[in-house]
Image (tube, rainbow, N blue to C red; front, side, top):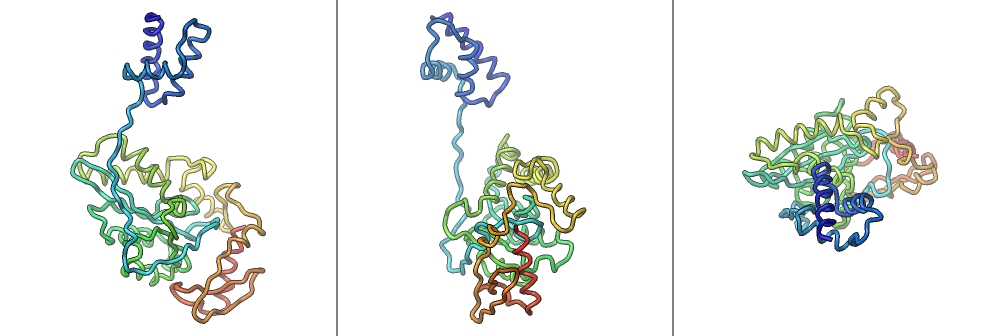
Length: 319
């Protein structure tokens, strides 16, 4: 029996050297396949205990967590405008979020702004604190990347209800550019799922793979990560394209280039995604079969019927 255990451990070491991050279940399946038909082969639990006793299982490092969202503040909170919506061209909606990064010099806070159509990171700043100024700098980078300042008009900016995004200064920038403000309505991260997912990708695939000696080194690593994320890394949600590729295709086909066939909605479905928008003096305009209102808390009312019709057409292209 001891000789069998030694053979199992030797095989386990070979697999662990070849695939350092393979999980215990997969490792057990490989060993079970290698020793199929061997008498007295230990069961799953006994085999996992054997591997654990000999240091062949993954060690999970528990990272200290840092809170980045403070929703206990006096600022106005805005409703969720993007729930159930699908976007078919860039700069229709952006999602913003903050995550923390641990370095040997202390914790840094990464503010990201992402385009919800292409999944491209359009703005980022690494700050030493959670002050709202860093979020505003990331937003300004995204705004500066627009071809025309008017491209921000009627764009939906989505975020959590943290004090940085609800602050007077941050909201003022969005209203000045004519953007709509959208926020999560609960603490559920699924309400800002794309931003949360991109935070995880940047950290797990670039920032947390090894120690970061300094804040300057962290900033350089973030810069390289954003460049690779936008232009090299393929995305399943984009049919294995990079975020830059749908934008290039859209330039070739200005009528619209959907990221993925599974992101498309039928016209009937798209009608159900239209959100009711109200103002103190709402004006109802019928367009493309939709009832469209201007919204309480929107940056400004529609200038005229043509502007409202254009907004309705924007919604109609979701399908």
